[in-house]
Length: 120
View 1 (cartoon, rainbow, N blue to C red):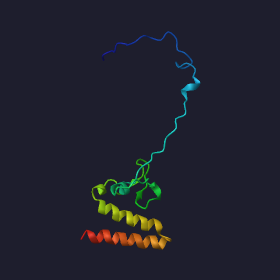
View 2 (view 1 turned 30 degrees about the vertical axis):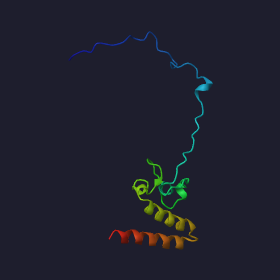
View 3 (view 1 turned 90 degrees about the vertical axis):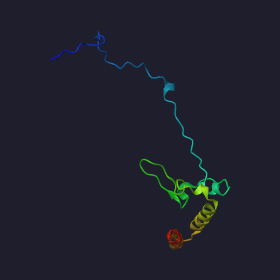
View 4 (view 1 turned 90 degrees about the horizontal axis):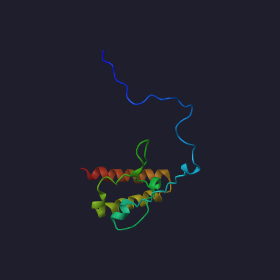
């Protein structure tokens, strides 16, 4: 069997404490986060500057353990079609104005019917 040559120097003495000096009070500076202000992708497509309402928007997809929440249409290239964005904004306005869960379900059902009908 081959022996391995030692590297480095042997410690003269092993200390009881760690090598770091006493902590300086300025080391633990509190880091504050600045909330991210997003703009609504659909509104920007039709030339309006409107803050993204995030979780309050009917088209918002909640995040999970790994990914944050996002607009359902952000990744679909809707920004290339102002007419589509305008139509989706109208659907959003109707969903936000729904006075009951039943009215919300009816609007969503009509929206899904239109989407499925346009695919045929």
